[in-house]
Image 1 (tube, rainbow, N blue to C red):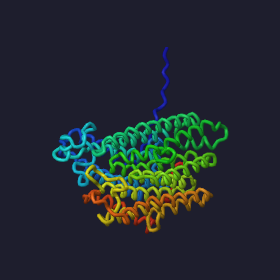
Image 2: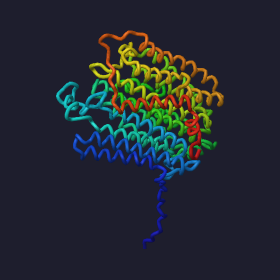
Image 3: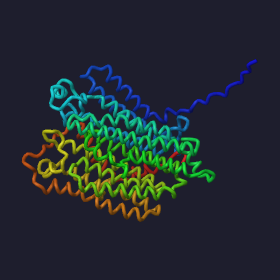
Image 4: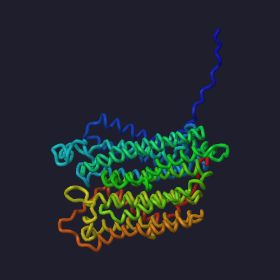
Length: 521
């Protein structure tokens, strides 16, 4: 006789859709964007995609501002069975990502700088052919880049709020795969663009494997992928630390790779140089924010109790990153590669704040991400305007005497370079000041001294470009400065204004960044 026992009830995960509405809006807009690509005639796609993308980002931003100011619990909330944590750092990073993505989307959508758009219709179409000329005339701009941008943005927002390693890995892939494709879509310097996409894909897949292997080891150690469970297991004394630190090391490789932290930076110069400049702006600003948002959450939630064991290693990584970025940046002759090495140096500065396991370290790093993102976004917007017959003129020799051709553009770029160098009255100065102050208060004076030295070294290659623009004679056959359209002008203006305001009046952003810590810390 068969006896049936009553099965235990299935646990339905608790989902607070209200808290994750900004992510749902972005991913929903991305799905609708794919449908527009499938069903709209080609001549209607560009205005429809631009409208949908801007409305989606705007709606997510408006809802986020309302939720953060009225409904968000002080200590944060977890949803999807604890897989997503909507806390104050998540809200700050979401707002930063949405604002930066809005500026990057304006650069991507602009068709005035490059007639027909900066993105190729098909990878096999060569520049100057009939098919390429048709894109300028009747075909119009390729618009697949818009759903790719929205999916990448949705993945970034999920990544910075992920409260377990499996969710973080899925979000990492969602943000990475669209970026691999976007890097290979440039109309000009096609082979360089496709080469950068292949390099980014291969090295990105390699780093994802490190992340996944580290995840598996940490699951074996803690019997869970939740950050809080890993923290509880690490705080105990009845387990071997071999799996813990092996898993942490492999996990850190994947995270540091995505943040362009040396010595895991090798993809950065080639990809920044080869990708379409609007895509480089999107990666340089938003990917940095997402990567360090994940680094902060993993180290400060899951591994705070073991910080004395791994902080020394990250000290060395930060110094190596600053060394590589500052020294190799001096040797660059391409402005996009120079900004790439600047990004590597800034990753080292950011890591100084991330290592400081204090509330000041968290808030200062968040502020630095906000400041750096807008400055980088505007800088790449300026780079896209200096052009010759072959497209963008990124060799530094082409920038000689730029102030005589376009004093306004040279002045804007000078201001942005000074902000990256950390000159007072800019957001870069405030960002470095608060990060280094947080590190000093946490007993890391030697690391701060090293950071100040490399900051001074890095300032030299920014000043070199300024001297080149103002104190060199322009070549007779030098590049021209394209008059930007409304979209590019708005993106550059947004970056410049935020860089200036955060340098003069940083209190509001600092207060917001320091309004609370991670949930379940």
